[in-house]
Length: 135
Image (tube, rainbow, N blue to C red; front, side, top):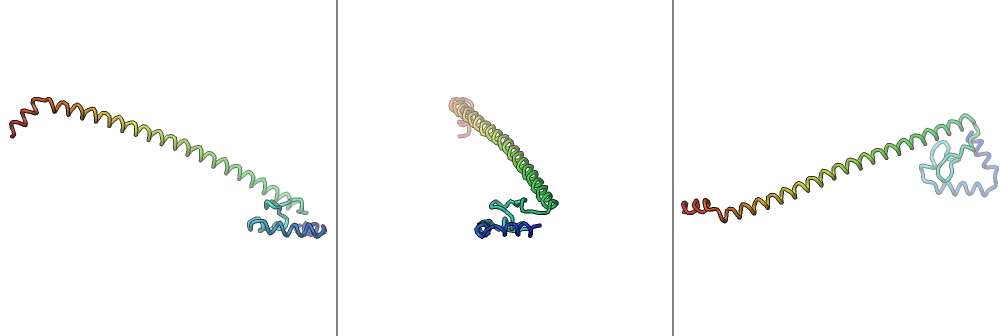
């Protein structure tokens, strides 16, 4: 089957053979390997028109469709994971913002209480009496 496809290609002129050689040299190694390395296009896709056996061609097309479906499923799963991470990030960011606001409010309250205490301490007669008794 593959041999027949190659024989059909060899019947063409020398220019097409030279283009095939040049093209194969441009392909990354992963595109050049495998059972159908000689009938892959520039993108590494098997050109099923060159497969003479109908069952083999059908098998290649089914495998391609299965791979396409698996790739779509993987992209969808990745998108779902990304959306879940974005939601989780938003929850964490909201919790951080709330904690920062709570800290600011606590600092304001502390400062207010400290001011009140310092003012009270300055004018409180009881405290002054206690100080005088110990010295």
